[in-house]
Image (cartoon, rainbow, N blue to C red):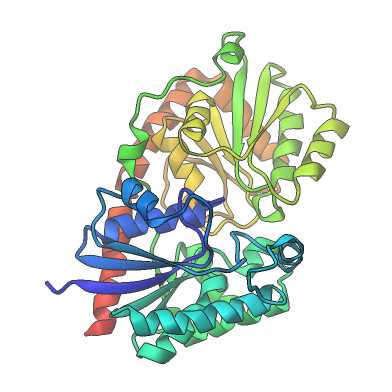
Length: 404
């Protein structure tokens, strides 16, 4: 079978990632390399400590992955205002765009040179910051363009999109030969809000690498558990999309019935100060712990320490953290407005806005050891088939279909 060469554009990659997109790019690329697919991954910015020697060490066991970098201020989950702040503190000798949107255009122009220099059969671009780069690469090489939607502007803003970002997304979606959506939920948004025909969008659910979650990690927060406290966990960016304010409201309600419960919030974002104030105003200063942004082994410890993981997302295209929790033996409660709910049978589900229903389900899990153990055991079985190998196989099929 002929080796397929993919020119892939993405804007974050572990260990320099602050969200699920980087994790997804890592898992997908790693599994594609095992499926007779060579990946040339183009990163939009040069980061300290992210050099080729370092990458070879980290990915020494992965064949067929090559990295290209560009000097740009494009940054994970960046907004126009945040870009302006970065620009004010950037080194004077570096060349950047006048604003975020100029930077995206510059990224696209540089993508032309990459497409001329790197032999490839297919172009694969992840989310809106990379769509223009994918379009420009396609303009040079004429190769099929696959765009991968991990989140839309409607998800990120709670239904109030920035017009420019929406236009960039729409342009990329219409220019693509095929669109990959991480869930049926995301496909529905694409069809409804971007004027795309159903047949052009293929659902490829995210996965996890189960081998990375089978380590016998030590229990975290053991001193708290020794006192008989229950632990309920939230992991995610503290933004309107993830619904951390609903998590705090649920915590207040649960504590009325289970006062010996600790709520842990792991993440950072533009709502962080608001959520801290909300917790203080509700008198939850001693019942909620803000752990900040946690990754890798420390995050796995949090999952294993928790009695229940709760995802209160207002609009969640997928939700990799739910799979990570189950893989670490912790049952979950996820919002019905999440893509991950499509692939899980043994997970508690609730509307993000239904505080009473979520609180009731949490209390039941905390009070019933049998329910907790059943959800953990069956949930772990649910995720056994949700793998990056499966996702990579579907993407490889998409590549081959468009090369035929």
